[in-house]
Length: 189
Image (cartoon, rainbow, N blue to C red; front, side, top):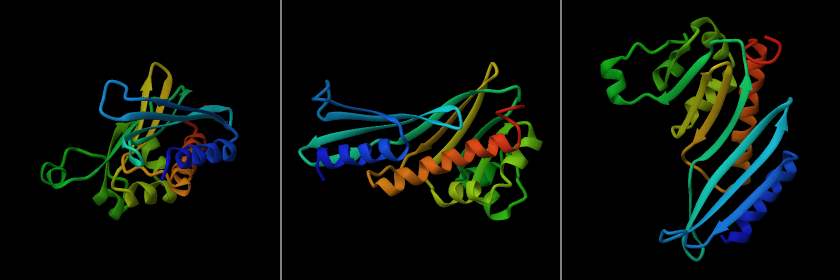
């Protein structure tokens, strides 16, 4: 794999999502590696979506991909707030008052904290969102309400430069947006 290969993947993503690409290389930026930053900004259903990833090149052709982050900020009148994580052995021991959705396998795998239980349960009725959060051990969804604005972040810690993997996570993020609209957290709420 070369830097050109990585750049071509991001160019394809830019075209696929009709966005604006920024791809920058910072040579030995006070560390022992070159740092590459790739980001795409595009519009989805009237919302500005940002996709970011940092990439380290320790030596020629040897790359380490930092977590992929997909995010947006959207106005809301709701008090919806959500944080998900992969349940660990310790979580099972201390059982921290996490929300249960009623989907047994999901509740055993993914921890949920948040406000507005009714909306949270409605949000997780979407099986594609549940299945994606269960399937990927290295993913975290955060929806934080800050003074009437939802900061929505999907962090994928096991990142890849495979276009299909990045594209799949962007599509899941768009599904999250659609589900938030469907349950009237964003949009005409």
